[in-house]
Length: 416
Image (cartoon, rainbow, N blue to C red):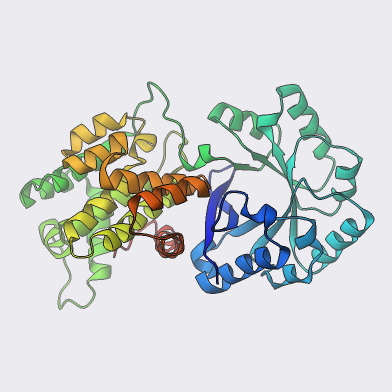
């Protein structure tokens, strides 16, 4: 099987929960590889990716939106895709004809969900498909307010879900909600903007203080003292430690004993993940952030294992860089302030502040991958020199599977 590239972008509902992902499959050539590769090669990349990588690793419990052109739409190969897991996204290049409409009806009768991609106007051809499709993706970036209101108003007359794509700010997302959009997709949702002057959630500042104590190798007594000021955290810690240490002859009833059993590394990871999973008071997209941060942390660690297989400290620092890289978006505090509070090593500082150094370039690689930029991904992989596209994709899927398991147990994170 040829090397392939997998991009994945979150799709969220009005409650900021991830409900699906758009999946971008390319052969390992360029961003436009699928434009020139024949139907069978393209379809095989998709089908083999599902079979080889495992649908549960790619999507968790969510659906995957897959772009289909006319050739793939009309081909029997498309029926190899699992209808319970995918949404067939009809590209704007598909010329609507009687044959295309009949094919869409057949696929819907077979149980597939259909979406219209990149809609910027409602014309006669669009209306022919509106009774058939389940979802209409509107490109809000290409529309002014008047045109957006017009399209939203027309679509309300049809039994379709409205998805706003290419949303570039929170104000635009809120306006789309008011117009009746139920789903949203953009890189903005993977990494929300930092709002100037925003007050950080006090509960998260407590977690940040705890993280600072653990990372700075403070005495166990100091960490224990801080936990004692937080009864809820203390209870969660004891519950979690007793659940993962069930083989011990007696229950763990003291904070100090729990910290000793868990160890600093696992305690640190638990606190880092709690930062993303604790209750939100200001509407920041905790679900999407947690998924992205957890995936980044694990993928950074896996890349570091390939880069320096015998350097466990380097691998731990890589995980921390990935997890902490979204903390500014979560807390509304500029990254230099966070880095200053946590007293990090120089390579971590360079990675988080300038994307410099070994860890910084690996973080930039992951960020380019999140945006679906295969050319940039390949360029950084070539620069790093120790990782190929196929191996990187396999590591990404391992990290996605780990992050999905973390998400499913977010109320009581299990760390490994």
